[in-house]
Length: 416
Image (cartoon, rainbow, N blue to C red; front, side, top):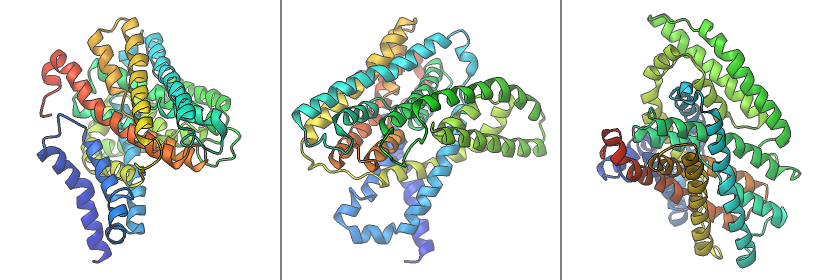
């Protein structure tokens, strides 16, 4: 089979096949399409086809094509983070900054504590799974971080599929996910401190915190007013083309800044979209949203699945999977729902926030891959935590639908 024919076959498997399975299999009300795409990637990857028929996998997915998919996934998730930020209405948080900060901190701190307890149990009951090059303390820290993750890209996809992104629960979720991701990379840098690992942030957590704060002040107090002057409100084709290119350039600069600081480029793209003027948001979303969501992001989620290697025969896999999954779910619910209720949200909305914040997806894989490469967790623990992340991500959408369908009615259609 020629290289071009293989490329067309893989394009079909990435863009068309998972959507067809999700739509025709009546899975739309059960799980997000992103989960189907990740699972298909796992089936085609080393844990599926690569394990059963490695020669066939190498023929259908040779290294050059896998590299192409990985490169396209980076572009796609950049644009996805940008359009997710474009949907964030900062006016929604006017007068509610303290509440957002409270929930944001608790939604990381509480699951971190649950994760610490789960990690200590693993060290006691399954010491072989807790082996790593960083010692027990660093293993506990890495496990606690892994159980605290919320992934902005998958969360955005879930909100979009449930038609919640413009509603209060959706806006609060986006803001909380951004805080979670920022704190996440601070914790990752802390876990890697002194390991000599080249993966992840090279700066210390304190340096990241200081320069991250400076970055936010610059973006909101300096760049935001300047953008209103740079992008005038004109409704002609030439202006719209110039705006689109200018927005992409600005988002790339913002993403580059956060990547340089060790906060991950997705956060920079998200913030860039969030601070753009309203007329710019409409012009950009109109041109790139559907292409990005339907045609580009499948490359990212399939790429995530292709990188997953699961070992179900690892010692203590079942026990550790149950404990970490329960700790992750309970921690996110407690850390999000209770403070949300504390600031005056209804129980329905508070629980829905806890449900949608269960999404881990790509961020979990990125964090675990960094820890594995640094020798801080074992292959067995890597497999268990990947399985945990898949389950919690798959549960996020049905739990959110169950909690909100009565409250918002047509906002969460059964066949949306």
